[in-house]
Image 1: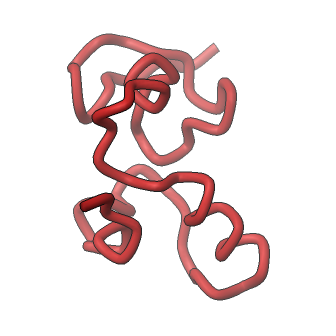
Image 2: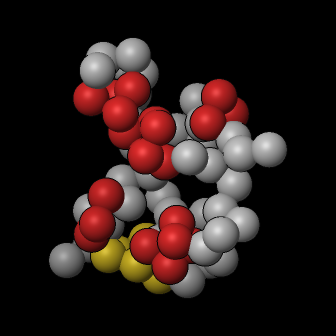
Amino acid sequence: MEQDLCLICGQPFIIGEDGNELGFCVACQKRPDFPYDIDAYYKDYDANKVAFKGFDTMSRGLLEKYRRI
C-alpha cells in the first residue's frame, strides 16, 4: 500500500482509500471546516466536466470552483 502526506494536516494516509486521490486524508475531508466540496468535484468529474484528477489537482487550481464559502 502506497502512502503520502495529507495536503491539509500533513499526516500520512493510504493513497486511494475512500476516494482520497486528491491528496487529502479521510479525516480532513470529514471535518466541517474542510475547504472544498469534494462530492461536487467528483460528481463533475464523473460527468466529464473536470478533465483531471490527481494529487496536483489543488495546485492546478481546479478545486477553487469547489471552495466552500
